[in-house]
Length: 454
Image 1 (cartoon, rainbow, N blue to C red):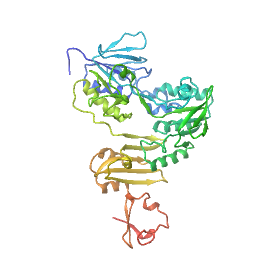
Image 2: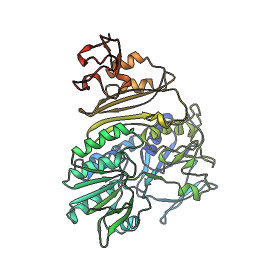
Image 3: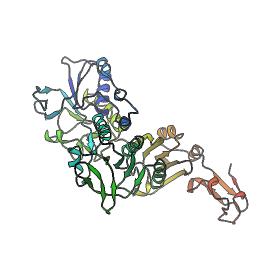
Image 4: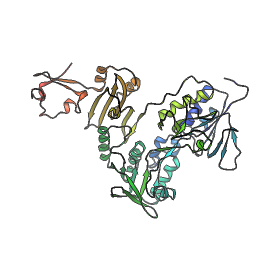
């Protein structure tokens, strides 16, 4: 697509959403001018590996996914250390926090991301701002500050407030720096958004086997300490000592820049199906976005949205955003985990749900497939991901239950005496894990009286 005047697209934010939007724009159009402005001092890097930077398992250089050459090759102009403080939609300009001249745009994309949420814990924000041993982890600079603090004060004990994905991985890496580490989680289980109660219990056991203490149902009331932190106090009165506190309790969407420019916001920046905001020629993408009252904060949503917003910006509105199915595939404390779609049908108002489940507590494997009206609606795969490609391929599609049985290696065992069936898909224990003195519920025959149904 060629135009008489070269269109100038400005992106605020070089996170995954901003960077991949720039890449998609360039692949769709070779002529447009693409500028990225970020207050970060590093080109695009992956936040997933940030915890590993603390024990120096990865180098700072290896964290950078796209080096300077990547931007040059694609003619994407990256401006580091440039904090945008104001947007003027009427004059189509952005302004910076120093004496820099305003920058004009034809189309503006807000990839503002999010910041770590700090719950209303007494002293938390003050002690973080005063560098007294309370930290959040979101950037490379955060990781380097944490590492420096650990060394400077020879810290022996760490507390991570928040048992989500990043919190648990952070605890795992802190443990590897020989710190006595405790995870404090407000909810009654770990990874409450990704796991059900049974799998959450298996994960807790596995983490505790790594000598990381886990405290659930724990509301932190206060950060203790004067010159520097000394521990936390829970609302039930319990006190835990620590030389460093790391808060990983969810995210807060970055919306102030948009809000101050008169762009409609709620929890996030409100967008339509083409990722357009309420202001003409201004778009939003990634963690900062709210679509149909939903906010996402997951990488699959950022990647999906980056393709749609790129097409919208160049005027090719072929694909509408439909929302993103919650999807996570990663390693948590070294164990493969995939969580996708609906994971706990008991919380859904409508009926008609079916669950196929296989739990092996000894080997720390848990596989759960959730169906409705014969369609695959969700899955948890923990410790065994051989069903992963099938699950991704078949989400929201009709499935064959016999095929699922084979996939999960779940069988029906039949009592030779009375014909009673033991269907592993409906039981909490696979047949071979039943105790030796198991009795048939029908005729009280022994476990040896059962044979696998062919």
